Figure 1 (cartoon, one colour):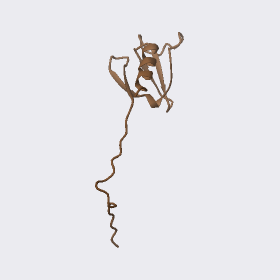
Figure 2: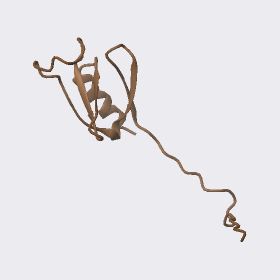
Figure 3: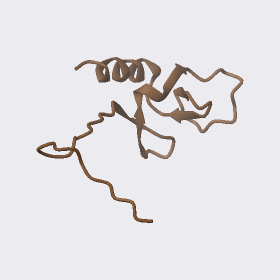
Figure 4: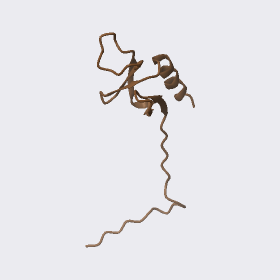
Length: 88
């Protein structure tokens, strides 16, 4: 049995386009993290009792999959980056 697939009579195959809205923040070891803003659930500052984060962590970014990223950038800056990434 032979299967044969052919493209419809289009001038060219369809082109699928996707766009990611990424922000760049600094991780605890000064590495750059690029995060998709569509995958960010919420942001918050670490609580005073959250002693298990590295020194200098100023913002926690909670992702839609339940994981979080601790970043050195202030939450106000992260919030501004998220809002700016939403602009066309």
